[in-house]
Every structure is written in C-alpha cells, then in structure tokens.
Image (tube, rainbow, N blue to C red; front, side, top):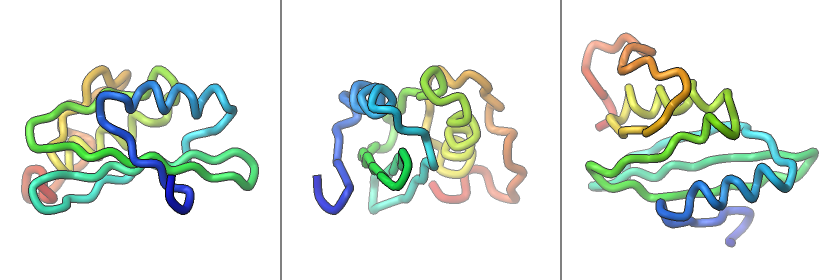
Length: 110
C-alpha cells in the first residue's frame, strides 16, 4: 500500500473489497481511467475520517465483477463504467444494458 492506495489484481478484487466491507467501510466512489491499452478502476471507501483506495487494472476484453451484492449503490458507477468505457461488469443488480447515459458516441472513453 502506498499513500492510502492499495493495488490489487483483478482476480483478488472481490476478496479485497469483502475485507474492506467487513472492516466497516462504506463505498464512496468508483472511477475509471483509460491508460494506454488498459483501464484503471479506483474504488474509494470511507469510515469516519479513514479512506481506503483499491486500484485494479483491466485489460481490453476483461470483465470486472460487480460489487452490488456488497454495496447496492455501486450499480450506478458500474453502469457508468460500462456505458462510457465499454468495460463489461458481470452481475450488476440493476443493469441498464448500455442505456444509463445518452451519448453522441457509443462508449466515448474507450
């Protein structure tokens, strides 16, 4: 962990987020950024004045597991990531199937 940021492999993402949930943290935000030929997804959690950030790297064609079973509000962020970046998110509780955002260009940040 570096300056409150923990980098996790995509394969271990759910286990790390379960641990954060067990520690009593709440979801604050999920943010995606395109970096060269891959994407970085940053999950931010808070508890009181403590903040934890988990970052994972997703390559083109990889799927991200949904965390809506643990944090219901994540469905908005996950639909946004899918609609704007084209990243497939598996198991979203409320999946808008690409219709959450109306954009002139399909997946504008791909």
